Length: 199
Ligand SMILES: [Zn+2]
Image (cartoon, rainbow, N blue to C red; front, side, top):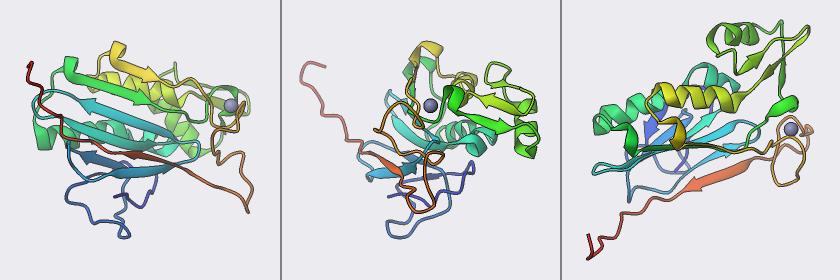
């Protein structure tokens, strides 16, 4: 199942959400082992996966582009997961931030109201103001949000590649044309762990 992505911070439960082709407006999915196969589409925005191991395990799949990061969808997703599953211990939390537009490719106009808002909310490590354009480091800001939500820094993996340049592996909205603006689909299937006789 998937959702109708709107660059917001709403996260829904995959088990109770309507199945494809119905789609609720949301940008994140929470799923338990054995739940439905979930998927979201990306084209420069960052895919984020948060995994909680332990007895009551869960997985979050998030679509965190500039707007979603500004709205802190990571915090919304973590709150939704904790509301459903209870508190988590940091040692059980792991996160991955996938390929997104990065490095010198990602600039936004300084006079854009959402850039001005990001200057207030983002860490100085994640936004570098310039004369006309600000450089945005989405992965850095998302990593800081994950850490604020209790994911240990050494459990956060940041993908180094940029979707916009250097490779034709990825779809990129910035690199697209009006006639050719495809997306990448990230799907997750979480199975119930097989119990081992040795445990
Ligand atoms: Zn690039």
